[in-house]
Image (cartoon, rainbow, N blue to C red; front, side):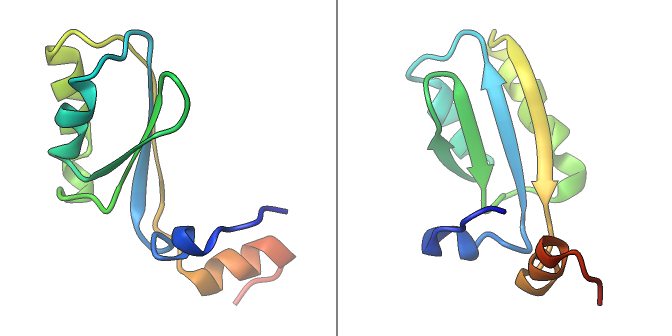
Length: 95
């Protein structure tokens, strides 16, 4: 079971990208913010939400990071489910 913070509800139904890099620095957030709202989660983990690019352009984020010399350890896109689907998945039912 997962507890959702009220602020996380607005991102349900939208694709998000989780990125972990080995060598983060100050400018990385500027690179990521070109693609959406960026949140730093710990030392080397980032979440890009409210994407400014279509889902078929998500690989552009990775390309931009690698092009700037960042060593990307993890790059995962997820989400896209509605609050209703999240609830049904949580309780083990389906629509």
